Figure (tube, rainbow, N blue to C red):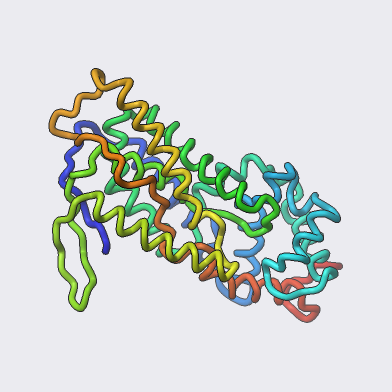
Length: 314
C-alpha cells in the first residue's frame, strides 16, 4: 500500500514540516555522496556514514570508532560490519577513519543521523509519509512543540536501539524514530481519518482507507522486514526498533491531549484518541543498510586492497 493523501485539512501552513523535508533533501542531494561514481563510490559512502552517522558503540562509549583504539578495534574485528577481514585489516580501516574524520562528535551524530538517508527509496518513502501525516500533527501541536516532539521521538528511537546492542559498530541513519513518532501521534489524534491509498494486489487501485488501517498494515510490514534484517545482521539498527520512538510519542501525545483538551478542541480537524494501535516505526523503504551491505563489503575490499585506488597506509 502506498498512501497518497488524507482527507484531513489543516488550518495553518505546515512550515516546520516543509523545513524538515527541505533539510533532509538538501543533506541527501548536496552533502551525502549520492551522485558519486567511479571506483571510489562505495569507499566514499562507507567513509561518509562512519564519519557522520550515529554508531551505537560510539554513543555508549562516548568516543568515535577512530579514537576508540583497542576496544573499538576488537568490536570491529568481532562484528565484521564491512565483511570478512583480519584484525589488521580493520586496524587499517580504523587508522583511515582517524585521518579522515578525527574530530567526529558522538553526540552530534545522534541528531545528524536523523537527516541522512541511504538511497532514493529511503528518503522518498520517509518524506512522503512525513508530508502526508506530519502537517496535521504540526497543525494540532503548533510549530515549536511539533519540532521538539519530532527531535524527541528520534532520540527516543536511538535510545531504544542503543539498549538493544550498545556495542554495535554498524552506522544508524534515517529519520526513523522521528517519523515513527509523527505516525504514532497521527493515529492517536486522527484514527478514523481516511487516506487515499494505492493498493497493489493483482491490480493497482486507489481506495480510501481509515488511517489506522494504512498505518497498522505498514507497521506489520515493517515489523516483518525488521525481523528479517536483524536475523540477517544487515540492519542499520533503526528500522526494527524505531517503533519505540513512535510508542513513546504515542503515550506522550495522549497525556498532552488530555491536559490541553480545552486548548486544542477537536472541531472538524481531529478524532477521538484510541489505544488500539501501538506506536509505529518509520518507513525505512529498503534502506536499513541491508541494500548497502554488499556496498559496504566492496568498500572495505577496495579500502584495504593494496592495489586499490585508496591506500590506507602510506
